[in-house]
Image (tube, rainbow, N blue to C red; front, side, top):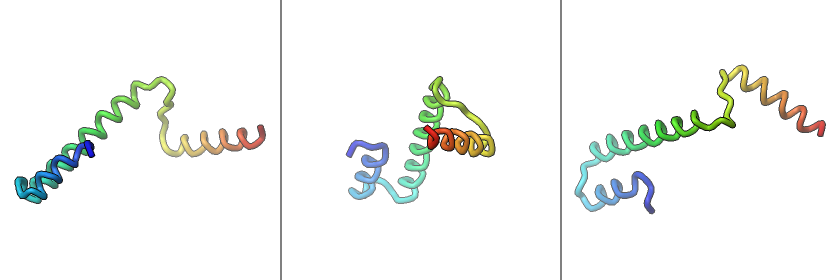
Length: 69
């Protein structure tokens, strides 16, 4: 139990952290984690970023070709 929110929940359960502060800190930690993940994903050369409409078309085409193989 070493995830980003477990120590905060532990502090809350021990009455060391008020609930409102817990919510704010969890939100902040989640936002920071998502930002780090997005930064990592953007650096990955194997990922092609595209708008959702293009992604749907691309995936449909790829899956159709995969089924033919």
